Amino acid sequence: MQVHPSIDKPIFLQIAEQLEDSIFTGVFPEETKIPSTNEIAALLNINPHTVLKGMNLLVDEDIIYKKRGLGMFVKTGAVEKIRQKRQGQFYEQYIAALIREAEKLQMSKEDIMALIERGYDDERH
Image (tube, rainbow, N blue to C red):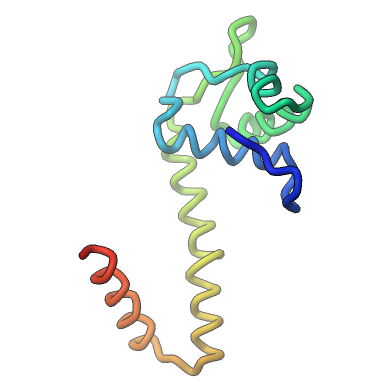
């Protein structure tokens, strides 16, 4: 994990996104303990309250939960929740933006589909 204080995104959001990504990619499987706020804070040399704020975002999204006296754990079903969230974001960030730009360029749906197919072919070779 690392944070970048120089970018516009708040540090607590960076922490939440990195923890979420670690859960999604299997670094922290469902029903396993994640590092404590103090461990992450010490690792990144930041305030534990900043880490807690990021973790609380994941608690609010029902991705992690606290076991009293034991720490934070990844909730069962967290990976699927993250997948659904990211699929929605994927549409907004990439597909909708792609269509808006294609309209400016006066490209048809067929033109866009041809480019996507070319991209798939290029990336698989």
